Image (cartoon, rainbow, N blue to C red):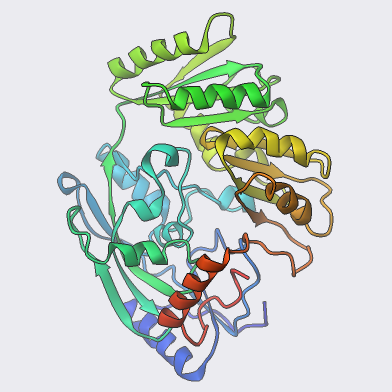
Length: 404
């Protein structure tokens, strides 16, 4: 990152609009961020001025009966989650908190950052990601133009594709100012079956069978012994753990748990965790807590669920790492101690090319700046990205270089 003066801190949308218009007129590149919990993800931003959006915070509209919430974009996730929990509601896409991976306070990430990164936690297998729940946005483009898309009611889908197009753009197309999300009732009861001692292949195979069963699971993860050691509440932290979560009304959850016991079969060592223990466990899964507060490179690998263990096994020939699986094996988190200069990028992407998928370098410092943090896009998607960039930020003043 280039040397920059003290950040601009817009007090409101009018201030932000003026700041981006001024930057656009002068072709001054800007770095946009809220509370900075995801600032370390991606490439260094080649900006001459930073804009801290933290003052654009607060709830605009929330009526629990309407299952809709509208907020300013820099509202902390912790504030939103507390408000929703008081009304037995939640953001069903279960957005990850990246703060712990970077040694930052939990809960300080913003709702705008969640959409900009298109976050989705363990429940993504059932509920999707942030872009599947956003109903409306207001934002300022790199042209210095204010625009809106969508609305405040669940049935209003006007401009919904625009909201999807801006999700996952990491602040390179527009600065969000207001966001409206669909919320859903929080499950009355949460329970997790923990099966001990399965290897990666057997664990993921069980997860896939659970996913295809009528049990309506909402979380499926597998931890080898090396990463299971840091999980809360499971008791025996010396063996691999295979986790299957059920949520809903208590009577339904307990019935489905019995059905899953039959699917797992006799002779397996397992326990069931309920309520807060279950919720704490899945927070650890969501936030990659086995790798929290470390400094080693962390990768987030997405592939087909049944390919996860084969990818991991093939990668062992090239690098040493710790790992675990989410999304029934389709999401592999990897931490590489004593990493090579490229943080393992060449080994990971070369191995992944045999199986299909994409790899994001989430955490790394002091590595070769030429290493691609985000997976290179295929030609068709890269062309679409260029068209979006031309439409929203033709002078490339918003977070230039962040996505490589």
